[in-house]
Length: 482
Image 1 (cartoon, rainbow, N blue to C red):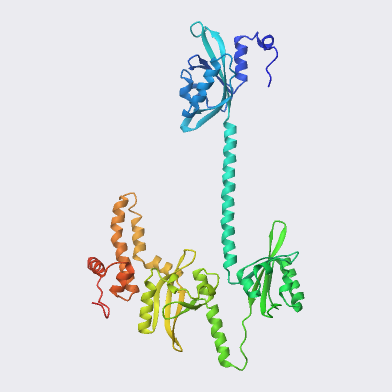
Image 2: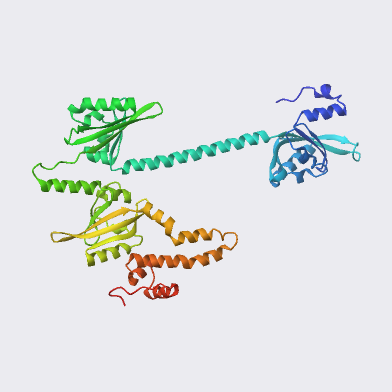
C-alpha cells in the first residue's frame, strides 16, 4: 500500500488526547516504550486480551515479557524503530501468558520524536502497535486437529480394509463380488477360482451368467433380482458350465456410493455314492463328517508331518486352505514350545491313544488358542498314521480360571497392595507363586514325568528337583526315571 500523499496537512494538528485515541483505535494493544525498551504505558483496545497480564508488563523491559524464541524479534523491532530511515516490519511475538500459555501478538514498532513530559529532555519514545492473533492461532489449532482426525480415520479405514481383504482372500468359501447392473465379476477369491477352474485374469471381468450352464440363466437372473429387491436371497442349486459341477449359489446386495454390488457365494455339493454301495456311502458320510466337523481333525505320519486336515483346523491356524498344511510339521502350529508335541507323540506311540492333553494352537497371524487334544494311532497298511482331534476350550478355561484359579485370586489380592507396597516388593512376593504354578502345570501336562517337565520348562533336571523340594511339591518318579 502506498503512503498518504500529505499526512502532515491531515493529522499534523492532532493534540495529545486525539493522538492517544488514534493509537488505541489503530491496534488491539499499543505499548509505549522508552529508548531502552522499557514499557512505560499501555493502551488496550481488545477486551479478549487478559488485562491482568498486560498490566503486569508496565515498568518491565519488553524483552522480559516475551518467550525466549521471540526475543530476537523484539530486538529487531526496537532496532528498526530507532533507525529513522528503516520501515518497521510486522513480526509475530509470543508473550508468556498465565499457566504457561503463550499470548501471540503481531507487532510493528515506530520511533517518535523527543519527549520531556516523563523523562529527561531529548529522550525518545517508541510505540509498538500490536494485533491479537489468538483467533488465528485457535483457527490454526482447529485445522491441525481436523487434519489429525482425518489422518486417524484414514488409517483406521486402511486397517479395516486390510483385515477384510485378508478375510476375503483367506476364506475357504468361494466368494465373488459382482456389479449388479452389468453383472460383471469385479473380484474373486482363491477358493472361487479353484472351484470355477479359472485363473484370476480370466475370471475377473467375465459376465457372471457365463460361469453357469445355459439352463441356469433364468434361475440366476431371478436370484439376482430377488437379492436386489430384498437385500438377500437364499441359495439355489445351479450347474457350472465348464465342469458340470452342481453348486449352491447365494447372493446378498450391498451399496457403495451410488453403485450396487452383489456378494455371490458358491459352494460345491458333495458327490453322492452309488445307491447300492453301503461301504461307499459310509465312506462318503465319514469324509463329510471329517470335512465339516466343528472340531479340528488332523492326520499326520509317524513323525508328525501333516497328511490332511479339515477346514476347522485351517481356521484355527488361520490358513487359507488345507492344501497349504500338507507336508508341514504339525508342531509349527500345535504346542506352546517346540518339545510339547514331541511329548504327546511319545506317549501316543507307547500307549496307542492319548486324551485330555491341554496345549495351544498358534496361528499364522501370531494369535494363540487354548485347545484340548485327543489322539490315536491308526494303521493304514504298513504305514502308521497319527490322528488328532483338537477342540477349542478357550471359553471353558476362561470360566474355570475365573472360578477356581489360585493365581486369579492372588492377582485380585495384589491389586490391594498397589500404592501401599513398592512395585519391587510386589514382584518379589509373586515370583515364587508364578514359578510354583508353572512347575505344577508342567508336571500335570507330562503325567508327573519330571524329566519331560524339566525339558518343557527349559530347566535342568537337577534344578527342577531343587525347586520341587523348595515348594514342597511331592511327586513320585514316573516309570523309567531315576
